[in-house]
Image 1: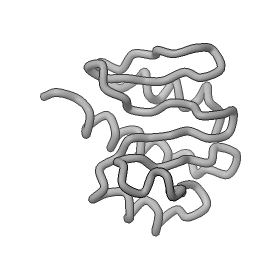
Image 2 (image 1 turned 180 degrees about the horizontal axis):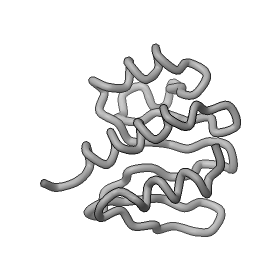
Image 3 (image 1 turned 180 degrees about the vertical axis):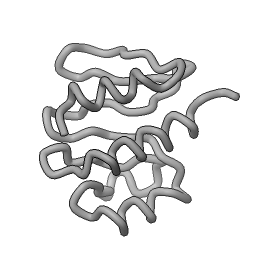
Image 4 (image 1 turned 60 degrees about the horizontal axis):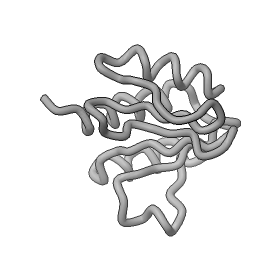
Length: 101
C-alpha cells in the first residue's frame, strides 16, 4: 500500500483533513490524530487499545507495536507489506475513535 492510497482512503472519511508536510503528512478529524506517516514505509495509526490486539493477531505482517508505543493507543503499519483491507479497517477504527460525535 502506498502513502497516496492511505491518504485517499483517510480523506474519504467524513471530516478528515490532511496536515503536516509533504514528507510527513498526517490525517486528522476534529483536530485529533487519525494517522501520520512516520517514514515512507511506516504509518502510525491511533486505534483503541481494545481493538489493537485483534489487528495484531489477524495481521502480524501488517501491524506492529514497538516498545515505545505499548502504553499508547497506536499501532505501526508497515506499508511495504501491508494488507490494504486491514489498513483501511485500522484507519476507520482510528477515525471513529478520534471523532467527536
